[in-house]
Image 1 (tube, each protein chain N blue to C red):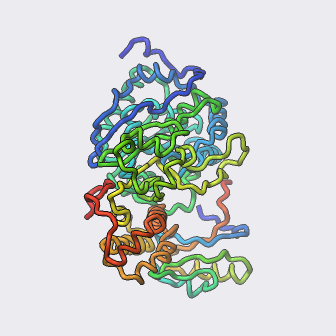
Image 2 (cartoon, one colour):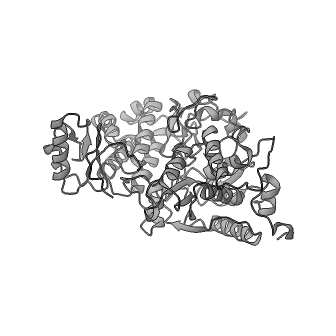
Image 3 (cartoon, helix red, strand yellow):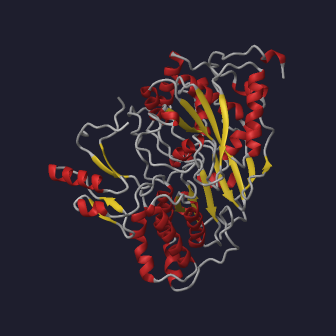
Length: 454
Length: 78
């Protein structure tokens, strides 16, 4: 530990002219077990302070300034839903002081590793954002929520916390807690259930967590990338050039996390990750937003920029009330997942595998999800195998409508979106499969499915 | 923390999908507001607008053995 860090308390805003990167590097993970294959050395506290400077205080007036900054920057939740952060923060502020702030790092999405990469490489930025949120919202304590199996991430966070204590940083206490490794463990109501000692399953909330969450106190649950962005915004203000979305490209059993500028197209992104170029055949389609996301045919998506696809955002300069950012007609990047479908893979077989995974991941609490998601997965699986009856396939539209929006969490909505877009993008394949033929003879599943395609 | 006052209109009928077991009483008690899906779980088709609608909505809420229906205005913190 460097001795000059011992007396450091929260500093003043460091004004930086150049855009500061969030991750600023490319990290690769093996999709099967999230083993880190390639990436630079993670930040320690000294490296973090060199790169970003000290975290400005967010107490009192500075806290209200920070909330105004989040609004001006139109920061949305990076866990995938892109809910306006400032709407949650204002709801917590309206509910009063003495609540909790939860940093959600339970990344259940099998095709995303951006939160893992941030935890490994920028733990101090996440903890800065957590402390800023706790100060601005006058919270009594904060929690960092992880998967039980994320031992490396837990080590990185605990080391970072120890460094901060040794350096004498004054900030609200942080507890590191974890829940079972499951698709739904990071769903916000499941996070609160898990922290309260429950089985970490989604709940139907009659009152928003912002008003009465943990212990019945106002609670903010925010994804770790969102909090890392809060830490940057607290330093730079909303006028600075903000870093582009963190994106995970899932292809060939490898998850590549990178931070492309927002003007990069999907084609450019795949070229950067080595999936497109001379000699490489372009993908036939791309899955955007994760396993509850949307398929888009490659010709329609290749020229879209990441900025266009990155969730909901008000037009620059528009003054909209929080929560009314216009929804874009384009598919959303969600939690930043881009999964290209190789030209020789069968889109219906991939969709069936993902729907099967979603059906197995259901918490089995809500009837329409228990029966509907399972039926959806079963029908698409039979279709992919060329064994579906025409009547079954005709019923799919109605089935999708009966699943969409019918659960306590968004799992059935995601399954419905995936199935609906698959039927549109792969309509030629549907016709062929009804006749027992498949246009593509791939070499097994292209998308990583935890626990196999069972 | 149940709010015992009459909800301000326009109220919205909601189903707690975790509590709901698909018994189907609500569709009998409020046929104009609720239909059942393929598996017998309720789908709210319209908001209770007039007095008769509100009466049916209250009957469905009271008649649900799982107490899975709720009538709510947009949640306003006080």
